[in-house]
Image (cartoon, rainbow, N blue to C red; front, top):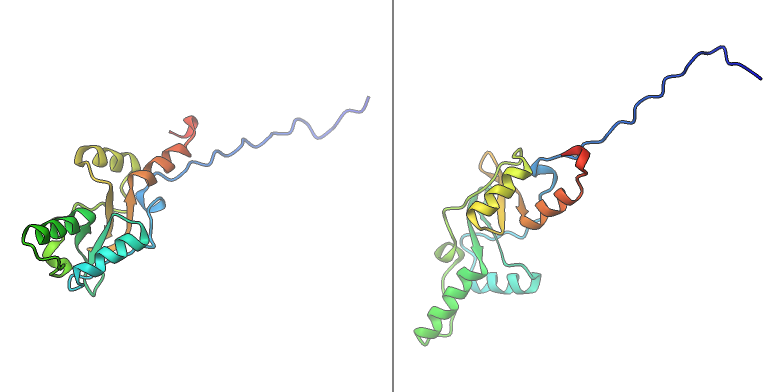
Amino acid sequence: MVKSFQGVRKVAPKEIKVPSLRVADHMATKLITFKPDQPIFEVIDTLISNKISGGPVVNNDNELVGVISEGDCLKELVKGKYDNIPTLSGNVEDHMAKEVVSISPDENIFEAAKMFLNRRLRRFPVVRAGKLIGQISQKDIMKAVRDLRSSTW
């Protein structure tokens, strides 16, 4: 029998990689955005062709100034029907929501989840220093949480 003279070797503990819980690490960054002076009919075409339900509105400095949604466009369509005028008039700024709830990229995803439940919104623009840098959706939060293990909560 051979004995080792090196003594007992310490085995380095396996490092547990803790997934990030920040919004910045789970948000979408390639966004379709709209401009305030863009015609509403262009927005409808973009929403339909890209299969999205809305998007942020930014000015030329990429500052968030509003959000336009399918619902905002639908209101214009219905208004045209009641007025018996089938045209889509106006620009994005005439129809967008101007008071937008945004979230910080450094916010915890569980706080973001709580915001989704309290506000009943589908997505939040992610803003740093007034500039749009991304968007986080309920689905992004669910994907992030799904990937967590019980040992990393």
